[in-house]
Length: 568
Image 1 (cartoon, rainbow, N blue to C red):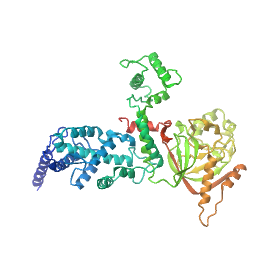
Image 2 (image 1 turned 135 degrees about the vertical axis):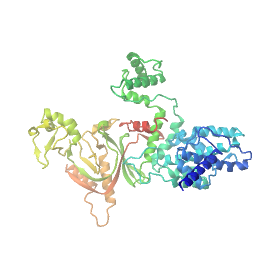
Image 3 (image 1 turned 30 degrees about the vertical axis):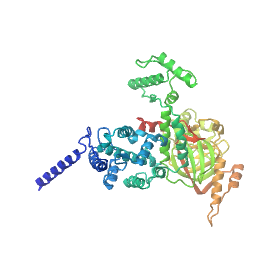
């Protein structure tokens, strides 16, 4: 019996090899499959598609030495359900949908996509060949390759428009973030029936207004892009690593050469030559000419149009990580833009400047709801501030926190004299709370918005309101300071008033808040209709028809660029 099974298996493998070799026998070399009659080419093309897919399924998507499918299983499912018929050409002529798809791939940048991700280079060469050479048009194998690349390319476009290219994280994971095979097959079949290319893709893309505004402004950016290739300088380099530091200098040198600030790259510059070249670059940019290499200089060198395009692509993909349907009312905090917005039924209800966390104490990205508000709040100093800032000074001067207007409290809520504590024995934390009483000088200002989160951060007023005038506003220890806190508080209060349920009693109004603040009373206000809160990191926006870029304050875009788009 075992011998019979082995012979049967060998015979099946032999048949398979003969079958595959009739159209293509190697991923490295293809032979022609010429059909002299246009009426018969589609039958032969279907045979080649079936055989190419059988080969690709065994060779990780490779159709030949230059074509590799990226969604092989899904592509195979589609063709299997359609009897392997070619869909993008008929009788040696392109179907109108093929021309539409090819133009879409060619202009994929207008959608924040990269053409070569969808076989553009190979498709461009193949299309030119088939359009120009009547003999090549009789080769069924070429038509099958074109069909497979267009199908694979379109399916990948669907995926990238729907979910983007960034891996989901804990705050952006949607329940439908993993696309099933039938998503691709059903949409492609629908396209073939209705022939409505643009409307199909529009239904796949996010519905968020910010996404469409940014995408609309993208055409103006792409049309005027400086496409010169510049060296991307990785920074910082590894300290005490001579090899890495030398590589960094070579990259800087090459980048300076591209900006005509140094005229040689075949030998290492000495310190004077490098400093002189940096000064020339600084003069070009109209900044202080000190000849010193800093992170800001490197960021400026890397801030080319091609790199800006990658940031736009990242931002468009971040929109794809948001819920498919946003709440009717929500608070939107964009950290790089230093702003807060309240959206009410797709209408911008209010906007405010914010101050967010320093790079060393970043404001976390999160989803939550405003649960309660506090007038004239007290401030409990976070452990991170105590350990990093207060503890070293308390060891030398136990009265340090008293001079700041802070008090030390034990677990029972009793006030403790700081001078009675042996501070030298603490290094990672203390068994006390350090608090600041409510008042106009409180670090939280006179108002605080609480929301559930694991980071002990919140939105609040501040006693340093003068900082809002700065263009760059990453100053806090992680919380978000809101300039228009009054407008936000009154919006939440009005929302509660308008949505009081029958039988419920609302214990506050906008007038109540005004009176408590005027009287400097500390009050905790429960929010009945909790307003959704999204704290996000979007480093560009559409403003007045153009794209406005914000500083990558936490280096988030840099990390994603190097992870997903370094080879683009």
